[in-house]
Image (cartoon, rainbow, N blue to C red; front, side, top):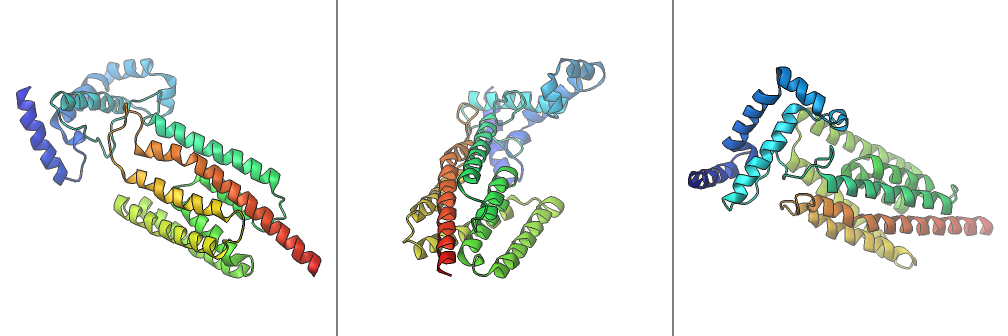
Length: 298
């Protein structure tokens, strides 16, 4: 085993200069996967594997090769820990303890709770706010996008929501034109990542850029409308989301092989969603009251 120490240290330095992850570049991992596939993933052994594989694993798309990678990942992690080295990543991800067919169970549960919180608050919003409110359709659309689309879409729709709240109620044409521009930006962004090259660095820079626009615009609106009794909720939401987003920049092996920074971020944002929907509800009711008062004056 003494030879493994020098070998692992040498590979650690080489992997730092390479584009791949340290763990899956480790020869012991590659040899393990190759032997596992030769032993289990062909002929009668493959049939035996498929007959013994739980139905939920096969429905989720877990293959014999995936199972070999999973088992060999833990073999490699055990060697690293035994020699006193830091836990490596594999194929760009930290090692997680699989639960059922979930590779990252904590993130999966946190994402479900996030979606559930959004759904509950959406139902409350639709119950409390009449459909005649000027912001009703825009807020409902935002809620559905939080559940079904990626972070870029949610941020862009939040920018559009701020545009509608800032100038769109007085100038609907401006808001409609701005929406078309945002849709074109999103289409170009997704097309590049999907069809040309999935660049993590570009995706991060793009999300940070639109996130800053979102923060500056909403905080400017809050400052301009600080007289409103509910504006403090929006300020707290914006600042909390910016602070919690720093969790995504942390990079550490998952605690208990389950809980990583991404899962913690998901869990932390659940109360933020509740507070933001509370702000949207208060603001929509305020706008409805203002429109009724204006109608009576006219």
